[in-house]
Image (cartoon, rainbow, N blue to C red; front, top):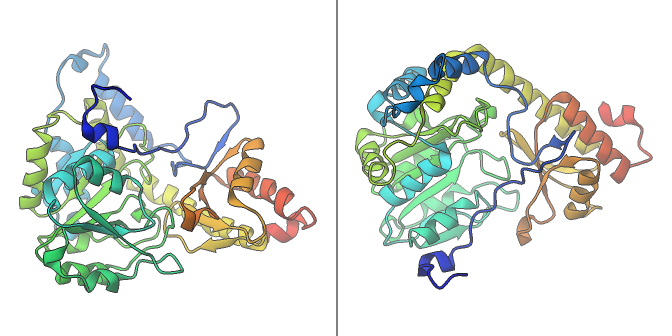
Length: 372
């Protein structure tokens, strides 16, 4: 700790991202990355944007990402989304950071679940926003009535992922609609990083409710975690607030290659549908197989599952898997310390995971029984 650090920096406890280990022949199921490559047109678009000699790289990218805005609006045209309702950014973490700063009241506490994306309290600390964690139900679902009962004048806004992370449980749009109606003078942020794997998006509500912000990312269902592209959708007045903050922080958040790759990803809907269906099928199969091994599996609408075993500590299981070169995520918070979050891999990766767990938790159970 340096004497030159500001008070804010001294008090920060930074977010800890999922491990990116430098190991060969690793089955990496800890950061919810897509197990399949992005659409083929993405690579071609990036190569085309580079040009023969990279000449275009000496020029700044479009600071507003107008072509990307148009592509996103066109993709979601069934919801009546217009280009003026789209705010692209450098990954959902940056988009969320601007949302926290620009749109959430700083004078009253922000509400979010006690078990949720761990970046939320860090943003609150960074921007000096008070917050209140609302406990999930015993089954890890969000009890929307806990938010509906609050006095709007006493809160600064509401944010949660849908599906939630790391639990994977999702809320129906009717619950979100009720929340928007209950707090019309406060912004409600729905973080939809995992929505494409089985939940229903709140985007259909974006034109109707001026206090709704929906955040999505290209990192998960579009397999572009390495490009860092995300966006917020809301009514134009909200987007204008985000743009004011962005242009006071970094006018060029998305480089040329990221914009070109994201536009190409949206253009190949067949690839998107095929790969997300494969992930959902693998999730269902893995859920059945782990249940056969005695695991308790929380129902998931995401590209991961949240599991515990009644007879084996999660930390012990994580270490045993690591020794087999399989990496999963273990959270140490008291309420979820018994659980592992396991990203959905390819069928081959999931099979290797099940085999490794079978050898540890149920060595006498036959492989045929587990695979059924």
